[in-house]
Image (cartoon, rainbow, N blue to C red):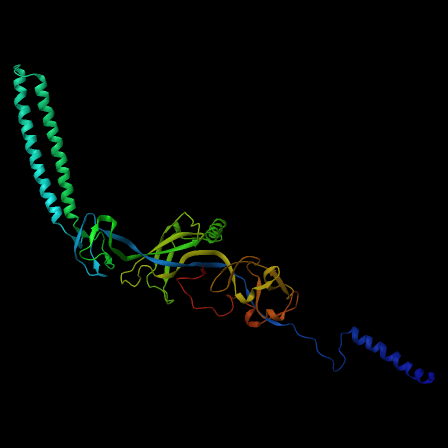
Length: 404
């Protein structure tokens, strides 16, 4: 059984406490002992600024001699002697091999004798024609006899020319028994040894390679070449005049070759098997450090992205719709911005679209916020500054390398 008198005793108190509680809530007051509101998270920002960003492209490459010549004999014969040390440097015109010259000396002497006989016949034919010309005027001989004499003279002249040509050929064959180096360079091992029957140009004797300067050959993927061309046409990329990029070689141990070179050739053809077009750079190699056939990497420098925007990698986030970054809007709230990300540089990502100069991008504290969350900017990051975060030491040879 409820005691109505006890409830009625508390009614005046409820009538006083309820309006007081409502007044406190309307005034935004917290009851004594309640939890305080969470302050907005502190974030670090960078103010976006446009600047010229150097771009470099990196590719796998292989070295090759400036000139690589196969040494072959021009005549058949027995190889008598090798006249060079394998692996030594030889000069143009140095004798590398000697082929037995005796058969060619005999052939030359025989052709000299044939020339003497032909010249004697020519002299006799000329004398005969000269003797018959005045006789014809006195009607002592017929015109046919004089014509035959003149024809014999012409035939003798042609025979002399033929024998002289054979004599020149015999002299060349005799000279070719001395196999000379066609260029100045470094020799390889000898393929043929003394006593070998050399069947003319069909037998490789050795090779001579010019190693100063050197060529560095690499392939540019067709996809990247097209992207580079589009960027140039749109004004987002400037390349050196004539496409003459400065080329730096990275050796197999990761060190940089001291002397840079210049890109001097780019093929218009695309390799159907690799999908790349061949390019070549010329590198000075006075000390012989580079050797033909080595695998290395090349860095092409000289391209610039004018007026580009670069933000640190940690400021770029991933979502199902793509990459984005948080900026601090005028209301001091985090606002997500979709980004069109371009190349990767040593400072961060190049942003093609999504940001403009003056935007404040959140670089630290992105994990503590969400879209529309109020934020507080750290005092040391509120002013315009370069991209935050530690970066690698500046590499003047490869400022913004793209690796392929």
